Length: 468
Image 1: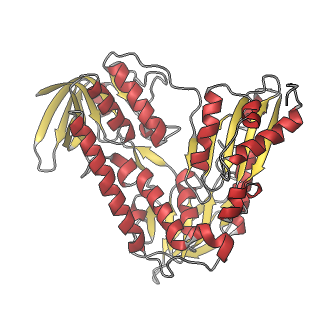
Image 2 (image 1 turned 30 degrees about the horizontal axis):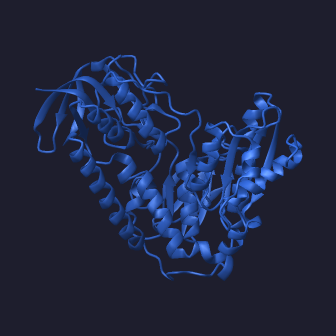
Image 3 (image 1 turned 90 degrees about the vertical axis):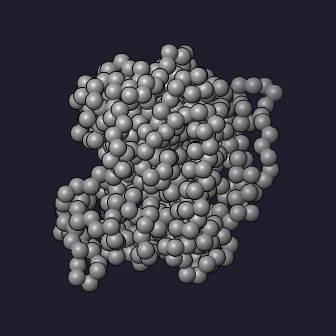
């Protein structure tokens, strides 16, 4: 039986960041990963694969150049599933190599196998060859991530009816696709395949989507999707999904409408991967979706020496926030001081087009009864937008009328997930509208949209500085 200072279950963003943080503090750390290679869901089926798929699709389809050369423009006329997979494998190999090097450099030990609790401080690991190893630790960090929700009524076959993990292994690109679930994952894949000229229909029982995003941004995003002939069937539920003898799939909706398609992607939620951990032996229990409840400041569970971080604790379920959660949890677990992270973090949705947001939405500002003003800039108002051939893209900032401070920044369009960090910095440094009016931005850049939006708001707010 081996004794460690910190035992980490899972090597995704939360697990690897937590393990390396503890190791840098001189602690003895063991990472247990049940997958064939380290990296977790983020590297192998989630964040990195979906974003690599997106970039490959946009490059090969010539999507970014169609503003100049027309909708028929292609970089590669016939795009295959193998074209998409080739770049994906190169990227994943690099990610795994970097992670293994980080573990080696920081002297983090790791083994492959399925872990489960024996008691609150002991876990057994069943390796692929059947060998059982027992390990104990002063503290344990559960960073097991999530897996796709797969209801019994859905006839999954890995070819025509798939979950988001299986989608990465398709053998050919479908001519038509129905995506069930208008959450982040469903929307990302729906728009990526739409960019590949697959006829996409998006279905969700809710009449709205992305409710945590500023409504004006969602409205602009929705317009862009409809403009390229994506079908959005919101407020409708797929009651029956049936594979047909001709290889297609038929869906019957709750309003009686029937759809026939080449492929169905079921992306209506994910489950915490906690079912094999034997949580009762540790005095823990998960909710109906397999998630663990934690203290939001320390990420400790109700068992003080057991921590959880990443997607397994629920919203926001981002790789970026998971890394920070894992780092904080590891510091608390080994008795180090953990500073509270900055208040505002960016949320990125890698759809086509991208969406990114940081701070308060207009709806949240209204709920708090804060007097405010908005500034809007469209990418086509920038010279860089003209150079890139952009006729879409929107940046919105919200300012307090009382303090003139930035309250939120919301972007939809090319490069949104990169551009948002300017707004994030100003938010966390408590900057005002004058920052955007008085500062110089590189020209020509899309970042100029900040100055345009800042001036738009400033003109409405009134001049309180005589020199302006």
